[in-house]
Length: 139
Image 1 (cartoon, rainbow, N blue to C red):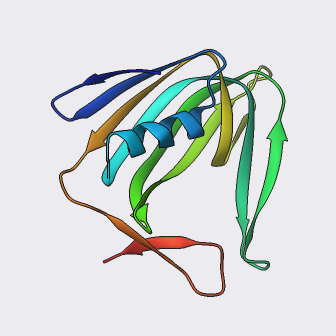
Image 2 (image 1 turned 135 degrees about the vertical axis):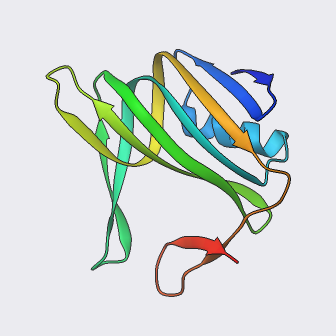
């Protein structure tokens, strides 16, 4: 991953083969980012999406082992127990022009990926929601 500091935060560029969520989360830890929003686009050769099942209180996951165009990712960065947590949703276009989306668990970049990260000087916190696997913003 390459990065450039900007007036609003950071501009990130990931290369083919990098795993987006792990690389992005590592960058946020290294830079001590505790509050941010982001948007991005690019492509994945494979990814895993999730959908929160209200009845079970857990995320259902599904892997996609095919090229997709990332039409948009959006999300935020907040601290949970002192560690930056990335909450990211993705909308993906497929070769047949169908669209899929959900919570992005992982995505392997191909051919490239770009993220605009808008940081803030404060800290945004998350807290566990009792009886679920969710972590909500804490005010």
